Figure 1 (cartoon, rainbow, N blue to C red):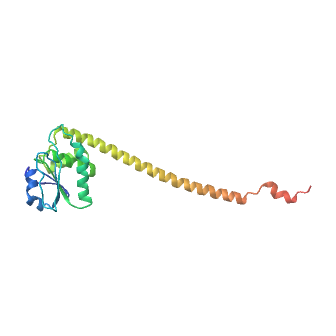
Figure 2: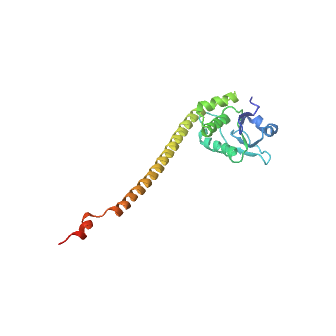
Figure 3: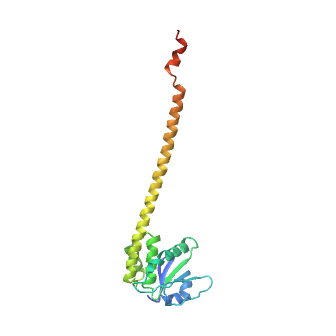
Length: 200
């Protein structure tokens, strides 16, 4: 399992350094972007048609891996939705750092909860095991995403309400204006109606 590349989604794979260095694995799976998240591993240069990214992350529970969650998740999402290419995220063993980053991606762009994302990756790659510190940071990230999603929903709801109120105001304004114009046309003061017939 450590030496293999694990299919997570049609555009996302996880693996260790051995699998990442085997070009046969890369070509076989059609991978065109490789993200190395292990500080201790060298930045490998692949053929020019394969993008290689190096991010220095230590596999210790005190390391602030969360600062890279959005960067890596956004890159994977861009590869999938814009350029239509597959991404491999790897670390030393494909167990903690790379798995943590992919879980963060699934939470952000596949609308999975932390538990759902973890169980899904664990099912695909049985050795997946983010360290305790990374897990706590994923919990914090989940709360952040929930807050952002709630704010987005609130903003959309407020925008809908504003649009409805604006349209209703326009309708009522037109109706009131129409009534006023009719009123101006049909209303004749009583005195002016009888004035011609009054004799002094």
